[in-house]
Length: 215
Image (tube, rainbow, N blue to C red; front, side):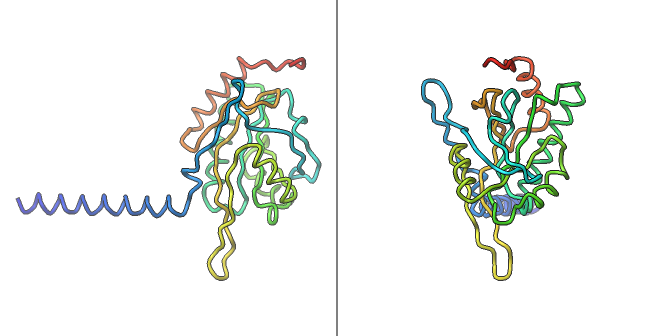
């Protein structure tokens, strides 16, 4: 009886530690539960819109440059210690799965839009995206330009001051938005979606979406 009680208390103690750790994590990482506000009007989600930014090669790009392709849009920052690299690794794995299946990769473009333009110059973005996938493009711009595109995509982000002598971090929502060849919102992937799930959905879209020029 005493042995059973001791095992029960030990198990309860471990459970409380896990719950406490999760509480601390979510308290300091609101991006994990920041809700995505998808507003619908006339049946269409009001996510996305025109933008003008600079890519990781220093060239000016606008949203219409990606017409005729699926556009996968993620907002993050290169100094992110964990979430952004993990999300980009998942996305890269999904793209590799698609490529392995013989998908037409020219119909897909993945965009990493920084929410930290003060530090994420084209040169820094170049190093970051090059470490993941050749179909990943980094985008930066002025603070006003980043605020405009973030608002259009209903993206939450906020600067978090670091401890004394440490660099600041950025809290942010971390969905991957799927935009159609016409630039309109289709769906999004969350941090819970595996590379296989993303690859399967993108495979379906590549077969079912109209990629013609007269949309």
